[in-house]
Length: 397
Image (tube, rainbow, N blue to C red; front, side):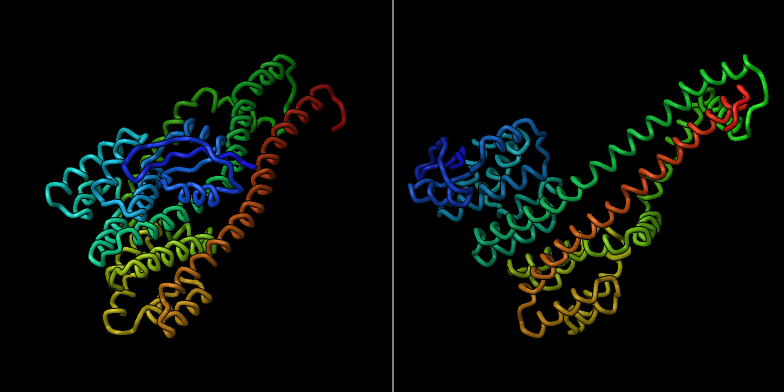
């Protein structure tokens, strides 16, 4: 049976650590709760080692903070005492300072949401608005639980996309490095040999050697042009027009994948906000912020106008023509049955699964294309050299 290490707190506020045997993480949490302590972290030993070795990002700190605070409030502890305990056990020095500052603001009379608002880089606007809705409805622990689910699903989706990008990235780096080495180191040595032997070289070999010598002599010009082009493109993308055109270009290249990704993000965010008691119009504005593609985000602007006019969101979303038909049908059913929040979460789950399939399909197509492209370039180099060698030695090619 697996052994899980844990960090927990007693009802008196004392921090305890240890290990417990259980079938899975959920069973370990239940066993700890049955012993009268509040589990803060339950991890396997291997996972613990990985976490210590990994660099902790602000998003990871936010997820940890939300998970632990949800557990403490769910166990009945008051907010100030829970924050005080979290500030003591936080492994991130930056997060520790943030929590202590939030606790100080609350003790001075500020609300929890107002205290969070002082740190927009740590707590997104959607996070703050959900906390504010939870405070107004007296269900802060429930809202934190929903936030925890939302952050975990977003992290899982991002991790999946990053994991499938590892192999193509390695392929591009290694293939590009091989081609550069051939052009700048190997070929110049052959050009010296060909010059000493004399004779006429085939046209492909001449083109290749000219390109190789130019690259070796003026590599700094090439590098400067690449860096300058990157800086110009990045600056242009920061403008509203540039970002819109770049996102429009990405839609043409990877339209299916991007639409499914943005549909899943939008629906999960909007569904989570509505479940937490955030008003529809405010929820729409917040949900629009999580959409990265400017083309789709600008289309969502008309949805708020339609919702204000009493049309709901299904009809205005259909008019935008940016979401898949299945998602629109499910949202329409959710509106008609009065279960819009539940149906939005189902749409998000459906398209997250579909997105994983689309990403795998896209990568299964991209990888052979990249291998073929690298093979053609390297093959051209090798054949050009062989043609030159055969022509000089007067051997038939």
